[in-house]
Image (cartoon, rainbow, N blue to C red):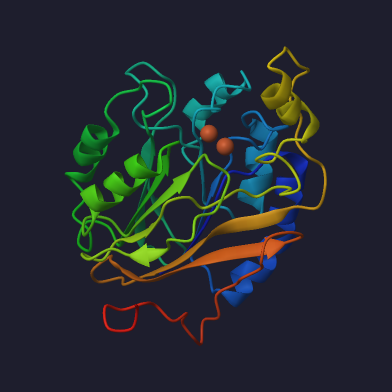
Length: 284
Ligand SMILES: [Fe+2]
Ligand SMILES: [Fe+2]
């Protein structure tokens, strides 16, 4: 199965570039399933029904989120009626919506998507490791489901990497979000789970993590109250990962970064050829 996951969509720049590039990505990568983190899609803060509907119309199968999930209050009532919109699974009992769900691609293959949030330097939610462990129990990879994808929305690279190893061999892919900066560590872990610490964002990289530079720089340099941050409005870049999984085992066959747009070095996987990967013999 060919899966595309794109990191946090930030404001109009992020939405525009994502919707503009999706048809090309679908065609070139023969995509079967598309997951996007939309936690900053509505002017940088949260997501709403109209944006979700645009995403679903464009062929996005599931929208994950993170700490900004509740920024747009209408989401509190909308999320309960829209199973394709996830919030982190480790919010306490009673939070509206769901943190994981089972979906199907066009060919009827089952995909379990889990959204979970880290706790280091973030709000203290329930233990994400315990929650993921509990969710995975009824879904043995390769028999009950053909693919399992986890979006770990977290600040600390260590926490994301630990979750990757914790799930290695039990899920198809663990990818991090929240930092808005893509990391260069796409790899298949020893037991077959694809992993990248952060997918990066879909947004304007001439910014401070997607926000217009003036206010954040002011905050860092003067430590005085400022205006509210607004998203940067320049041309965006789509950042994410492309993952190919084996339908029989559910494990990953390849993972490669995707970066297309105005900034960053662009890279798009070529289905005919794979990127060279370091080996114990081949690296020094
Ligand atoms: Fe974000
Ligand atoms: Fe976040």
